[in-house]
Image (cartoon, rainbow, N blue to C red; front, side, top):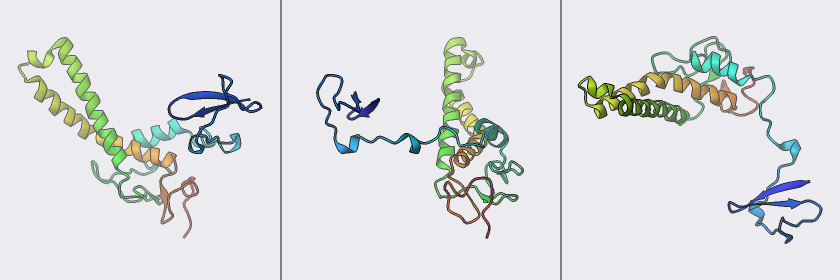
Length: 185
């Protein structure tokens, strides 16, 4: 059986029985670089009973609570409720939980700017309309960021829920707290 050892960016194969590498010499890696997880403790690709795409569709795209999908996460265009009114899921479990949503929102604006720039280089519709291309692209990219930020925020908090970074009630976030059942007390 072969195991893959990675060290300083190079890979080498080693067999369990011989302890030799592919070139016939014994491999000696620093202890910090040789970490092999047993197959029984390897993380599963998908937790059972939690369909990702369906959860993302019903919560992230529509801006609903990731746990129950019954109420909106938002109390305004961008402002969020602190907790779900139905299942008591806390949306922001830490002060910097919104930073990923900010990165997604900026990504939407960057994609819009790139698409508009390529469109201008290819067809020149902005210059033909008598507008300055750079300022028009900047303004439209900022508008795309603002419009896409609500979706980015709901998508980010849905991903946080799917990967157990959210909690019910006053419980700390983690694997035991967001299994779809609110904690008692």
